[in-house]
Length: 238
Image 1 (cartoon, rainbow, N blue to C red):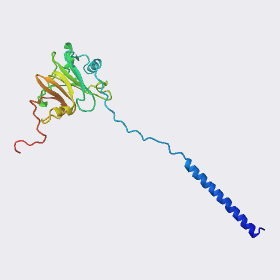
Image 2: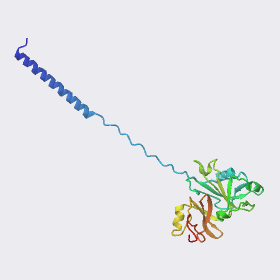
Image 3: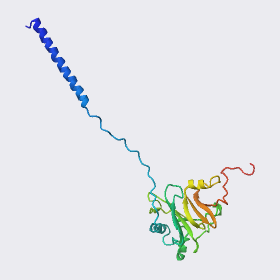
């Protein structure tokens, strides 16, 4: 049996041992916290980049290939014009189109005037109700073909065949103007609502523009343009 004094000594010794152990544990925990490595840096994911159209200058061989795709060998690029072809988004669908000046091959007129061609023959100088069903291609015609782009390769794509073949609108000094440039150059005028880029040129002594709207190409002459009345406008006082 331990005496009272011995029991007090044992209790005191246990208390000292427990205090030292707790102190060591606290120090170890504190030390562990001090040397703990900071979290690794993780950069935030990059924002997705918008795909920009890949506009590459047109070369004559690929233009000729596009013409063969649509017209086979019934029409060829007319080399007497400079430029004889230009590119732009003429129908406003965010795809690059090709506008190229053509002449029909004389012994292939039958193919150019077949009953169901793969292109739309139009005269932009005529209004919609003036388009004649008997409109056809003549041997001496100079034509403007506009091949609309398709898919990722635009007008170069093997499936890009939607084409407008335009009569009577091949002039000189062809160039492409954006809708914004067109509006800025004619600020204050009543203008047609073009859906995409416009083709500026000099035609029969007048400077004007070819533009696409309402599923057709039309000609804009600043001196002669008369805007169409708004749909739903009441006439005749009723």
